[in-house]
Length: 242
Image (tube, rainbow, N blue to C red; front, side, top):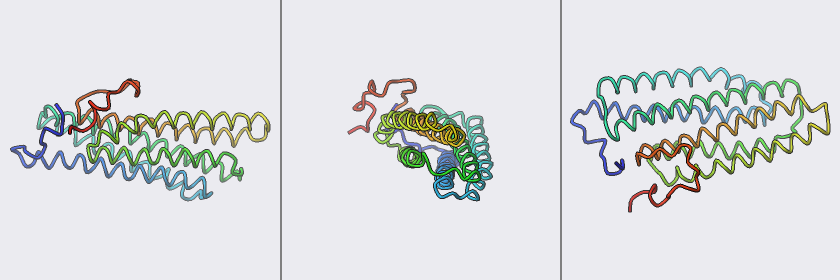
């Protein structure tokens, strides 16, 4: 059943409505924090701000705590309300999305730790152009994924599914460039490896944003498009009904 034809706000229990709304609100709050973590982690590197990098690492605990809270709330809803149809899909989508947001937070923490190491070693700015390019792309993907979840926008979600391949291509290109540089100058091996870990973390953030987009399609359309080639998706079927 398409969620657009199913009304969450029509439950007999007003408390149930409130519980579902709180799940979405808390997920969006977690998403906002995670989005800022990614932004600050990249800024720490590009601006050589090790204090900011360490704050990102310290704030990862807050991200973990938010996931635990959301999981507990979802478990309570499942136990007390035994939701069905689109309500059940909402709870499951929130659980999955919170897990991916927590992993994005982990990747942001990895970026921040590697940034601090590069700053402390005073290892120049080689590779920063690639980091800036990919970081801007994946940060936009995370923001759009959260927007698509909040608005139940399957068209925006499908755009993100296609965008993930673009990020993968940018990542592979950046890695080839850094590998060439490392082979030409053995002294660059250590800092380049740190940059490679940062780029890998950014690429993984793009993957998790893609997962969030897939959950939106599952939530709205009841279709699981994981492990489906984006070119095989029927966008007319998955888009909003006219």
